[in-house]
Length: 321
Image (cartoon, rainbow, N blue to C red):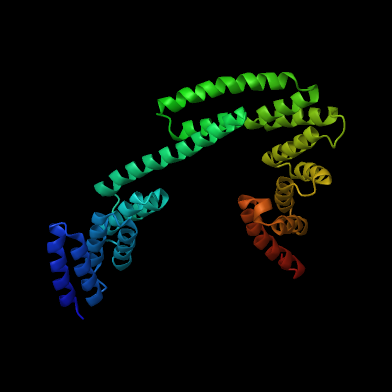
C-alpha cells in the first residue's frame, strides 16, 4: 500500500462525488484510506460524502480524523462542526469552531457558522427555560416561573413573544409577592428586607436587618431565624469578617448539622483565618455526604480544598509551615 495508490483511489472517489454517487465515493475514499491513512484529504472527502447521505456521526468522525492528522487544515474543523450541528451537538460544534478559529481567526466560513451556532444555542437554552417557566406556572410557582423567564429573556432579549409573557408573569408575581409579604410577621419582614439588601450588594445594611430578625425571633431555632443566620454569615464572608462567618455558620449547624452551605462557608472562613485542621474537617464531612447530597459544585469545591488543606496540615505537622 502506498500514497500513490491512495491518490488513485481518491481520484476515482472524486468522480463519484461530483456525480453525487455518495455510496460509491465512500467506497473509493475508504480504499484510499486503507492504502494510506495519513492523508487528511481522504478523510475530508469521505466526511463530505457521509454528509451527502445524512450519515452525520460518520461525517463527524472523519472530520475529527482530518484535524488529528493535520491540525491546521481548516476544512476539517468545518466538516466536524457541520456534522455536530446536524446532530444538535451545539456545544461540541461551538468548541470545534473555536479550535478552528484559533488556527485561522478570520476564517469567514467559521465565523459565520459561529454566529449561527451561538444563536441556535441561545434559542435552545431560552426554550428550555420557557418550558421550565410553564411547568412552574402550572404548579402555581409564580416565583419559579418569573425567575425562569427572567433568565430566558437575558438569553434571548430580541424575542418579543417571550418579553410579553415575561411582563405578564412579572405582574402576577409582583401581586402575589406583595400579598405574601403583607402577611409576614415583623421579624420575617426584617429577614425579607435583609434579602433585598443582600441582592443589591448592601452587605452592612443586610447584616443589620438580619440581626434585627434574629434578635426578635420567637427562638433561635425558628426556621426564619436560621435562614437569617445563614444569610448573615454570607454577608460577613463578603466583607471578610471571617470570625462572624464562623460564629453564624456554627449556630446554623447546631440546628441543621448537615447544612451543606454552612459547612462549606465555615470551611472557607476557617481557611481564611488559618485554622486549617478545622477547615479540613468540614470539607471532609461534605465530601463524605456524596455528590448527590452535597451537589456538584460544592462537591468539586470541597475536593479542591481537601487537597490543598491536607498538604498544609501535613506541612504543619512536619514543622515546615
